[in-house]
Amino acid sequence: MIVSIFGLIYVALIGLFLFFAHLAFVTHIRGSAVRLGPEQFPELHRRVEELAARAGIGKMPEAYLMQAGGTLNALATKFLGTQMIVLYSDLLEACGDDESARDMIIGHELGHIKAGHLRWIWLLIPGLIVPFLGAAYSRAREFTCDRYGAALCGKRKGALLGLSILAAGARHAPGMNLQAFVSQRRQLDTGWMTLGQWLSNYPPLCERVASVDPALNFGVPVSARGPIRAVVLLAGLVSLPVLATVPFVLWVGPLFEEAIEEAAAAQEGSRGSLVLTPTQADAAEALVQQDLADLTTIVMEFHQSAGKLPADGETVYSLWRSLRRGERVPTDPFDGMDYGYVAAEDGFILFSSGPDGEPQTDDDITKMSSVTSGAGPE
Figure 1 (cartoon, helix red, strand yellow):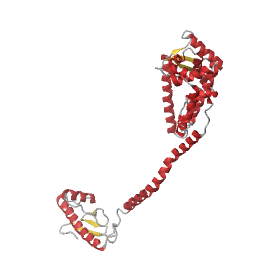
Figure 2 (cartoon, one colour):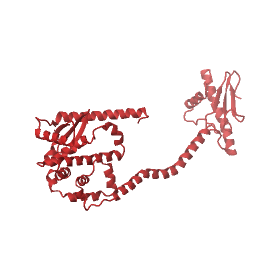
Figure 3 (cartoon, helix red, strand yellow):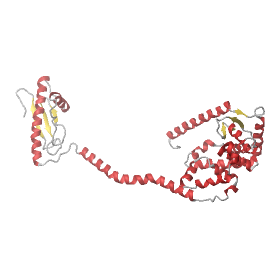
Figure 4 (cartoon, helix red, strand yellow):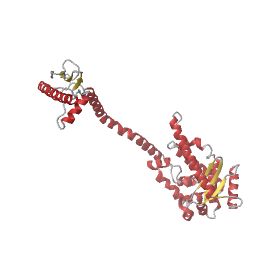
């Protein structure tokens, strides 16, 4: 992307697209979401301020409450130096009266700001688009922010409830068996599931719950089976096209080479000699004599009617096709090409390349004709 001017143009265009898409999103937030403040949901605003101060964030970020059609989510973002967090109302409502679960959600988003996840994001984009690397970085950020949320809410139970709501919703989250939920990690210990995790920007919620409360990992052994199988799958997927291409090239390659050689030989010998038996050569010579005589007739008829000779061989053959439509077009049997034609002031010459297939050699078969008064073909 650096060395190619075209690459830089595409990078600039993609950057502009992303910038304006983000601009539209931030505009939607500032215009349609409710900004928290002393006069707008003051209690919630005060709690965001307290948690931000506890996290050591010097400048209070803008905080918004937004209705998102039932989506249980929250986010942190930045625009031209201004950092902000957006709390989806449905997620806060799902936390109910449990303030620690709510604080887990707020603390998680403040963690993105405190950890610097919103700084230098444009410079990180080249790394973020690298397969697996960008996704791994994104998952690591989520684990970091879960720990910020758990620390800021101050209650592990509330932190776990905040994550459980993301998994099961407001109604069922309080009744979740977290030990059984964490045990679902066993189902992810396969090659394909591990590969799916590596491609995801968010870690599985059962992993996030286990990260907040490591005691829940009891009875769920750590296994390298999934990662090992995932590496084998990756190696197979990468090498499969190569392995499939090699036999194809070995089989088709010689056919292409043979076709190219035949085409080259045909082009090189397009004016060359055709291999004829002695009998075929005699028949070819008789055909040449007949063709030259027929072409001579055409030229003479044109001269008598137009008072001049055809300018070139192309004209001679055009006359043939117009005057003798439907008849075989004379073709030199020795090289497969049109007969040669040369016009002079007092006559013309028609010629065949002869048995060697090369014009203007000693074995050419020629027929000279004069158009002066009293003279005829020779």
